[in-house]
Image (cartoon, rainbow, N blue to C red; front, side, top):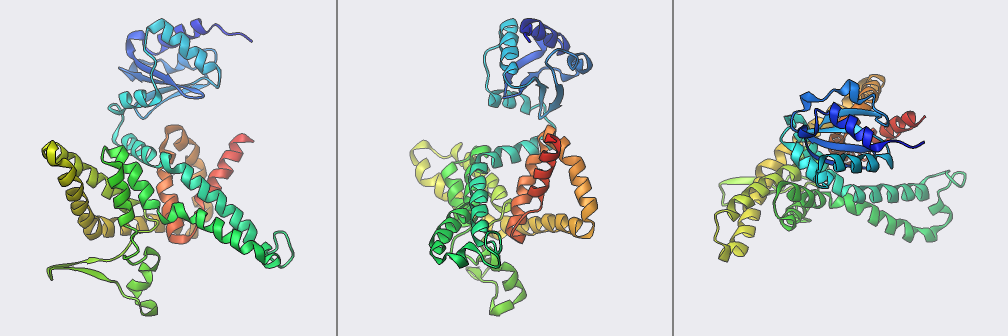
Length: 362
């Protein structure tokens, strides 16, 4: 069936408040992403009746019109032809719409911008862990045995895959530090250094923090004694999200402030070392301890809900997840997921997301 894309574009412009109301336009695989001067001028009821339009909504400072794969490119081309707008990327349009977003939308966008670039590393880790689980699952292929029991020569393969699978999570703060520094306008390499510093082997491994606090197995919290004036916990932040996220933000603010004031001739010597020293002290003395406990409270709260009332928790999550995807707010769950994995060795949110997607597909 052929469509008159020029007519569809004209109807879209009319429903959007006219060509003068359109600042920028881009498209993804299925949607038009539009930056509008005044979103209140949109006649959404009329717009949703236009041929090929599957729906529309306003989120993240942008008006999005769902068209569908393939067709969206032709509608976009007709829209540009009639308005004379220059081609724009999704990033360009997002930047244009950022000022129109409310505080919550801006917060969600930060989470999205930080975590989306590191998703490939997390996906790789998850898939490799799945392979390892198959090799070590008792009774999966052989009654009463794992593949490792039946074929001991696979142990080396299992160990190698396990190493590859764990790498992304062992050095997760470095990944987040890189991505967050890039998002906040700081130096990406300093973000990596800051993240690696928080998991340095000289620090008490975060997995043993609980034992040290409780005094189990003869462990106790080690400290940096700073000139006899105060002490800083000598504790790492393996698998932690909030500490490096906040530290990278503070680092970026400090670095940009210094770059604007330090002469160019000595910037390379002064800015990096000053930024890392100040941020490192703040991260270990204040940001890390505060955000560690905040992260623990958030994850324990989520776990408590599903422990006390799992049916209620599942119903609430199932009810809210699809609308959150539409608005983009589902990206905030990434931080909770990773914190759950760090604290409890796994997350029950991802399986529910899979079931939600399967239910929608059905």
